[in-house]
Length: 249
Image (cartoon, rainbow, N blue to C red; front, side, top):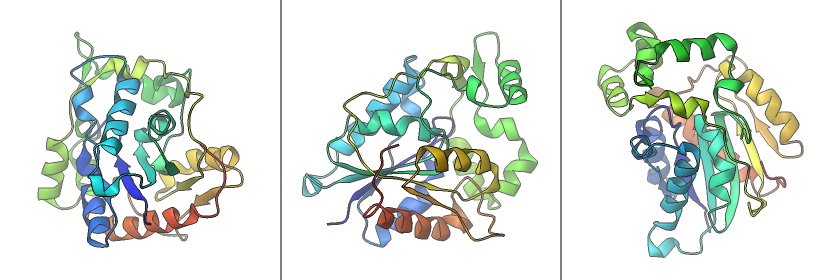
């Protein structure tokens, strides 16, 4: 029985990050869902806990035909820090895949885990009410055009990105729940911007798998559009590795 795949987008952007890959996976017969975390923003803190609960509810809300089917949690970018907490709330988690993603950061804030220059930039961008502009505005039009060449796709991605509260970046992430189910893990690196995280994953996931693209491959971290088919192949390949990997995240 193929596992159902939950593709979790970074809380800093929207579900459009994963939609092209989800469509490819569904077309290949995989049960797949993309939880929408943007609805947690207006409700206020605790953000990480609320986001983990949304992911878990998405797993529980799958069609009855999938009842009892194992779940693989697949997180991109900032979603990586949520996977362990979400997995503790889901029955039959059969694996975790971190795709160009951060690792869980219990007891730390997001700002504590990024370079000092980026942390300072984030604080400076906040307005008097503590809100930051949507993530695409952090990069600017030129960088966005490099990341997503298709104008229509770029507009759809930007439209799904919410304004972000500074409080989400200064919030201390809760400890990983002790009831987290043991399951294998893999790290799938698609871009050189995640070299440091992939290196940390090799240490923390020792005995599991840290999957990297061939030298010279330049899939961007956003996993979409022209890279969707390649990202899909690698996600399915990493899912297959779960049959012999043995350690939790």
